[in-house]
Image (cartoon, rainbow, N blue to C red):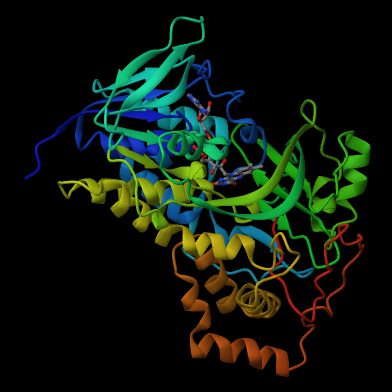
Length: 470
Ligand SMILES: Cc1cc2nc3c(=O)[nH]c(=O)nc-3n(C[C@H](O)[C@H](O)[C@H](O)COP(=O)(O)OP(=O)(O)OC[C@H]3O[C@@H](n4cnc5c(N)ncnc54)[C@H](O)[C@@H]3O)c2cc1C
């Protein structure tokens, strides 16, 4: 039995920070969550999480974990209008120009606005008397022991401009998102910064909220993927309040327009007409919001041979994925569970244990997210190309074969490992579909086309690439 530790500080009160805090509550007497934002008391977007205005869904695996962490979450959020649905049956997934075959999958995803989900989790976490939420407070640096071998807290400054002060901690969790300054803070103390893997996608989002059709005909969830040579996609998801959130996404320099009439016209240029058809007659609720996502960024803390005690890095600060498959919150949840497991072991080396466990967790969604995306030299690594080519064929076959469709969705929703897609039986089904001369990869209708980005090779369908959902 390990004695409860005294005080943990989590920097960042977004999804990764809150979920980590939930796990820490089982191991620490007190948990302080620090965020530089003025945290709203109601579910509403906030400046520190600009992506929160754009389409967010909670994958099936993420919902299962969050339900375990916060019993009653699904019912509570459904009571507030969130929509639980069967991913295989109710979603329209056009990863190729033809949608995946639909059938009940048992995968239950929860569609709820990002603001409501975060607000709910924040309320549940901060209901614990052991939790202090310190808002309007920026962490300026890590505080180290005299010999720099241990992080002993953080230096915090309140927004009102008070003097920066030490907030002592036995453990600091960096959950500050993709802009995390831990690499810089480590280097300043003589440590090496982690190696970074960056895969640029240069994505632009424009998002509207629309009122769902009165006859209830608007899909629960729909996605139209970008295709090789057509760097445009879109997604429509149910939200609470009888509305839908619809994001159009351009990559490699493509920009979805902001004005509603042009937005609608752009939706009509995607590889499938399904999304544009779903928007016919729907009125926007308010202005369009934009967002830029430059690159997938993974920091390999697990490879560092020297790292201070008393510090771990979680969530987007560790790895920020292209939102292609909506994996960020679910990965943060799996990491939070892993952190709790690592804390069951006493003694030094927590960071090494956790960062290694997190690297294993990240491998799958990272492979899925960057499949077919060129590296900075314009090359698609051969493994990524091979996986992308196979998956493109599997997705094409999945338009006719519901078993293949569900096999893919189980991996996408982080329920199964990708190796499930490479079982001989599955490979044979994909090949059989190909040999039977079904429409096929690259043979489906791509309704528009957009030029390859400057300096980048165009990835031809025959070489294969994994289509991106957004
Ligand atoms: C367009 C888009 C769509 C997405 N869609 C989905 C989806 O459908 N499903 C899904 O699961 N994920 C999705 N994601 C990913 C998801 O938003 C993130 O993975 C998730 O929010 C976890 O991020 P985080 O908590 O690590 O960091 P963030 O959400 O970036 O939060 C960082 C927090 O740290 C605070 N902070 C930063 N620096 C400091 C500092 N120095 N001091 C104090 N506080 C600080 C900020 O105020 C903020 O609250 C999407 C992302 C984008 C960009």
